[in-house]
Amino acid sequence: MTTEHQANPDVIAENRAQPPISPATEPSLKVTGLSSHYGPIQAIADISLDVYPGELVTIVGANGAGKTTLLHTLSGVQKATAGSVIFEGQDITNRAAHRITAEGICHSPEGRQVFAPLSVEDNLRLGAFARRADKAQLEAEIEGIYALFPVLKEKRQLAAGTLSGGQQQMLAIGRAMMGQPKLLLLDEPSMGLSPLLVGEIFRVIQDLNSQGVTILLVEQNARAALQIADRGYVLESGRVAISAPARELLEDESVRKAYLGH
Image: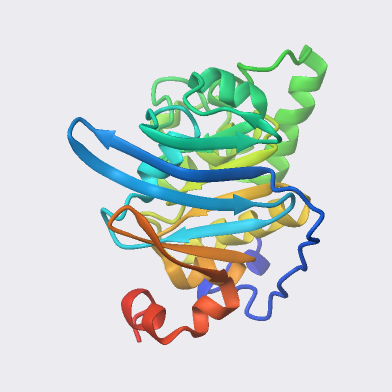
């Protein structure tokens, strides 16, 4: 890793500008009144949010707030019990997960969930399972992931389960990127990582967004997430408590006390 990527996440994108959203622009993702249950227990309730093309939107909140359930419901892993999910003008509510992936929503899950016995490269190839890419195209895309994460190229033939936590997180993001996402869902990418690796991962997320990848980021490290995001939503007990431009959330006294440590 290069030293330029070894930044403290607290100072990443400190002065990130909030891009203006044209009123004429339609959101890539429009979620309206979304609810989901685990048996009789309601995990998320009446969530509405928008993500516009090219945005980096973050969802922050305490453990148990419903952040991961929300991403699971968007990607088809968890069933919605009310509400709708519209992606690029199409209703994808409760479509099968593989169909949602084929539509261009790719999910890097909490806990990485790499295929431990398989090689790094085979994990990346599995990320393209929903697409029909020819061999040359696939090889070029894998090389693109290796350019993003050079350490993965060094370990390309090793079993994914032998990688460090940070390397597995890189692999999980790389695997999601192999789906050529129109919308990338990232769930707790900094979980369990050292401050140095957190800075590296957040730099990569910024780089991907600057290249035009639309990102919905779930993250418990609220300060780091809000510093790189355009807008943010705060979840409390499965509901949206606050939504605002990220800079405003960073300056909001109630958000600072609850999630930013001061």
